[in-house]
Length: 142
Figure 1: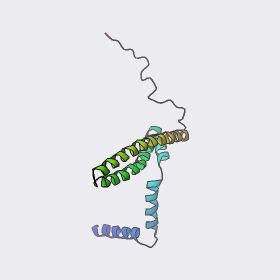
Figure 2: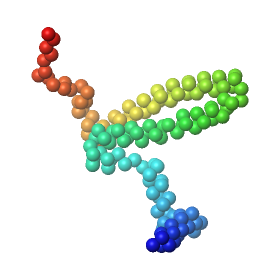
Figure 3: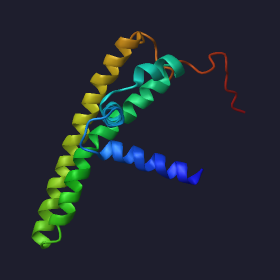
Figure 4: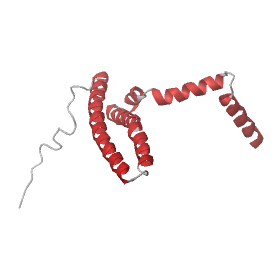
């Protein structure tokens, strides 16, 4: 059984990393592309509902948008070791970049969430945060 698993793993890895086109190689590259570039929020919305789908849409967008601060943070880290003045300028530039990045991300999320709400037909639904939790509840202070 172990020999069969090893043979399958070697065959699969050779098919993926070989230069000749094969079904496994094409299927693997398509699945990687599909995972990183396609959004599955419509499927999540149909199965779990709009609230969960909005969360996953936000999480996917946030993860994609975090690539720029991560790359710039790594560059800033390596440049800040050159001297105290360079470190101060790098930190200042990185802080200004983070402020602009956060503003642009929030505006892009507003646009994306409105687009998804329109697409899923929940644009005119009132928010749960605006509803009164228990309208008949009376507070008695004694």
